[in-house]
Length: 316
Image (cartoon, one colour):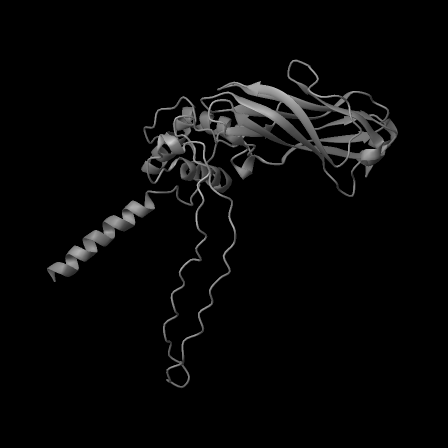
């Protein structure tokens, strides 16, 4: 009996510890007071936000959550919903280090063997109709899926934290045909590392849909920084445009980039850009992006139409 009671105590401790490792599935919002709130506040503080992890979800925590959601390209509600929790959990997983990384290994790729997960044989089951023992079902070993080699990240630089997002201060808008040098997309690159990051390539996509303006009706595409400086020579756009650039985003800085093009003769349709980037840490030499979630960020929707077209569309 003592052994059984001891086993129950150990099992309860293990279950409690496992439950504390991740944010629960319930919505967390203003007014909540719990250890879960403190966990969320701690993650936000580690992301550089000014917040006191006291376990109380007040107005200050709500404001920080809104800023975090905006930076991640999430719907800004101030509530920890399922999408926000998913991003917080992914950041928590990145920051977990199972063992110290030797200084000599920082910035290097470490090959790891791909091992298929162990599959336990199914237990024998009883046929409820005949009461006979049925043979176990055959065990199927899943085919291993190749995974990219992990990057050893120096915990002092946290250089996975270079984030790309849509510039929320530039809203969807309308434009007339025959408009030159029009801003068709605006984005932010935020460097949350402790080292400068040199951006070497921007990939500007033109999203295709049934209502899209064809790329043949766009011309002279180029990218500007927030100061209005052109980052490349004008090009004839296609649906996938790789643009070589060379600029550096310093630690703690959000760098704005905008996409411009000349609008042609189309009297109706939409234009939407997407943006991806490549870069390198100037201290560690790590290549970016490290996180797949920062790829292919969608920009604003630009509706093309003259006054008559816009009036007709609004009537429908």
